[in-house]
Image 1 (cartoon, protein in one colour):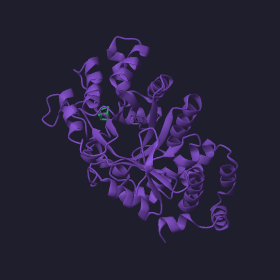
Image 2 (cartoon, protein in one colour):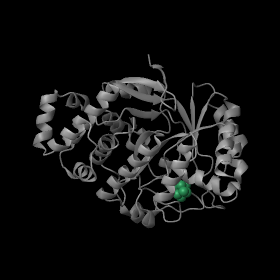
Image 3 (cartoon, helix red, strand yellow):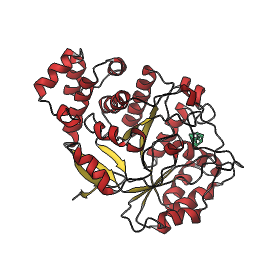
Amino acid sequence: MTAFQYASLDDSLAKKLIDRAGLGDIDAKVRSGERLSFADGVRLYETPHLAAVGLMAHRVRTQRHGKKTYFNINQHVNYTNICVYSCKFCAFAAKEGEQRGYLMTPAIVEQKVKEQLHRPVTEVHMVAGIHPQMGYDYYLDVVRAAKRARPDIHVKAFTMVEIDHILKISGKSEDQVFADLREAGLGSCPGGGAEVLVDRVHKAVFREKQGPQGWLDTARKVQQHGFKMNATMLYGHIEKVDERVTHLIKLRELQDECGGFMAYIPLAFWPYHTDLANYGHVTTGFLDQRSIAIGRLMLDNFPHIKAYWIMLTQESAQTALSFGANDIDGTVTEEKITHDAGTTEPQALDEAQLTNLIREAGYEPVQRTTVYEEVGASA
Ligand code: SF4
């Protein structure tokens, strides 16, 4: 049975399956629009009945988005891998002086964007390490460089870790920094850097950089200054079930307060070449689908759930469209971060490959801008 056939079970059959899985009370809440509790989230992670969780998530996805599945035509520019921090899950970062370290000047960033002018790219996604030497103007200049190369491109740049760093080194007021970033051409922010928003995981695997409260405080500032952003969770390493649920509830609370999150993107951890490599496993298909589905069910105030194909794999991302996801991300082009950690996925997909993945799973591909305006149903 394909993912889509399974997801299109008629409602009475789906209800029976969910009831038999012992999740009828959670299903009743989902159907009535009642918010799921922490305990509900834990049960959804612990039940062996993944199909029941997926059916609930799929129903919500279908009510909100029908068969529409969003994708965008984008490119990634990771402007430096040199980083002052040493997060244990990170295979991308290098120290200054290391042979594999690199830093793109604004001119190189401009060239990278120009190299894609023959393609209908609408977004450049820029995230990177925290370089010890680069000053405030560098960050403005890399944004300006992308806009110079392609004035109509949407620049989605800087994780909350980078934004926090930019604020700290600016010597300017918060209002001025966000005004400068906007004037330079920043359009929105990606959702990385959150990892898992609990102190235990922060202390164990990324203790040097911004912790849970710092990430949430910075995200609040970003949204209060009028920028949209995404949110992620890096799962499949040392985090526990209750910590995943805590993370989701913190995101949900901030969304209630500010409303600036567009999509939730669960990120499957790839251990290769990281300090957690001995820890050993790559996430399972079971956990990948469960993470998507629970994101859809717990984050009732997030409009979009994204199956990021680079980290999930194309196969798993395609299946995730029947487990609550309504977005498969973009064409990407030259992704470095997950590739350094061992993914065997390609560095890019073209539009036809992406739309074929979506159609084969039984859905309707719709190209979007970064902020989810529809560019038009893809032919
Ligand atoms: S995850 Fe980001 S902040 Fe941490 S070491 Fe890697 S590049 Fe640096």
